[in-house]
Length: 354
Ligand SMILES: [Zn+2]
Image (cartoon, rainbow, N blue to C red; front, side):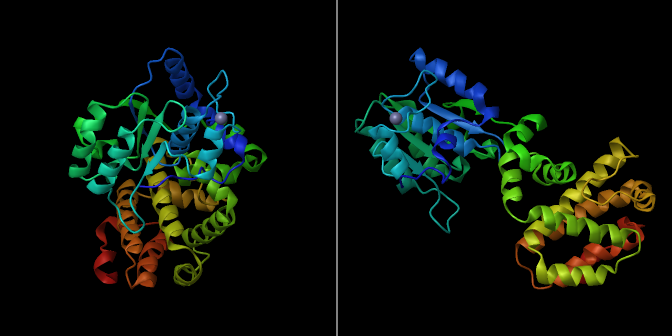
């Protein structure tokens, strides 16, 4: 178990929830005004929407000795300063130890002992457990007693991308807060001027599934330029202007395979989705300026596109497990594109490459 520093972001941003989280924030502020905060919350939703940040901000608010009328923390009191220093005695962050994927029963027992003491500062004792599905069945069982009989002022927050993987007996004792992908306009307004490039934003939105924090992370790196490069190369392969073996060779040497795998998977999914729902539209991940590429993409047989999408998912998994034949796998992804995926459903590239 450890106390945690808040994210290394400007203080004002650390203290306030994201714009798309205000509904939950106001609901909790109202509950707090009426002195009916729950003892346990489940913060559930896809990755990249700010669940962890919300938990940190709620913790900061609860541990602040002088929050404002909206229950935003003041940032200056002893509670806030201890929290920012990562050493507040009433804040506990529980997550798997480095290199581990599970939260052990010993860690949960230690947490329960800490929560049994009275608060050192102020009124609340707060614990954030994430990802909550990392608790083993034994860990989850040992948390049950604290959930059933929490001391006064105890607030537990379970954060999870996969709430179905959490024991139902735990879920039933938590008040659930669902965090979903926010509206595109809201994300753009939050990102500000760096979201002005229309094509890049559309590509990042497809790549991230619309998750705002992931889009921001992509914008902060060189992902936008890499996406332009991947789009140009794969578009070139599809129209017969670029050698797929040459591209596979470059990717194997120069591109982060995690990004390539994600990009190819999203391309397959988007291609299949558009072939089914909007046959005349074009995947934004490609360069769609010429009628030639549009013809290739919109004429592909849906069965071939679906088979290809399934294959890309498998390759992505293999790449993530660090298989030796990376170049062969990338070639098996790119060569079929040179024929517009013709008859891909009858091919079995896996048997030749693994
Ligand atoms: Zn404060």
